[in-house]
Length: 251
Image (cartoon, rainbow, N blue to C red; front, side, top):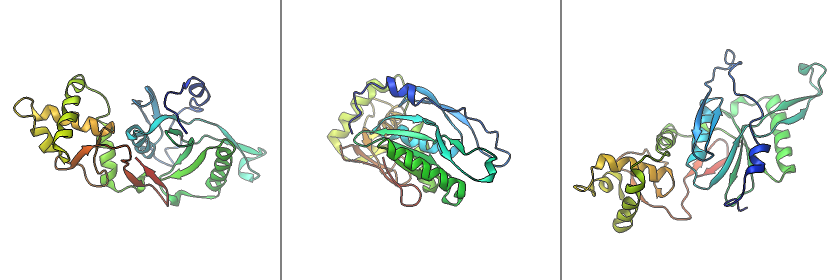
């Protein structure tokens, strides 16, 4: 499906967060809560664990993501178990709804490990999958912690360069033009190619910014450092990542 150029006023209201982030259960399940400025959405988004933060960072880096909504819907799930007293349903809020160019909306549940599964989670996943299907969406449970540690570090590192700094607008076209001219090269060689006109230390963050915004391609499956090779991104470039059991996420 094509999402670029769409007005999101209706979705911004419909998929506004359905509950507040808290860590009331942290005594039993320690987790970190926080908030960050989403450059993709231009809002302050909240996360309820570092696992969620890792996936939201991935969404910020994915150049095909047009929109995403944290805690977007409330699903009422029938349940006859005695654990819920006289109630015949309980409410569940999935983690994030993603609109990616060329794809149907995708509802995600973010978990630390497949080992977290239990009877209640199985009921939740079945209900969420049914709800998503009723709206023509896809539904997946993903495990960002299953990524190799250096890949997670790469994502966290690049996420820090998404924000545009004041000198990036004047430097970025020069970096793109230079790379068009010399072709694939290492980050350090690209930055040093601007000597003596510019200080390589000022060029480096511009290069990382262009990678984070998807204008330059780098192999995110290898540790990123100054010797990493970069080139101009093509329309078919994706960072292929494996998240969890059989779940792929192409960035």
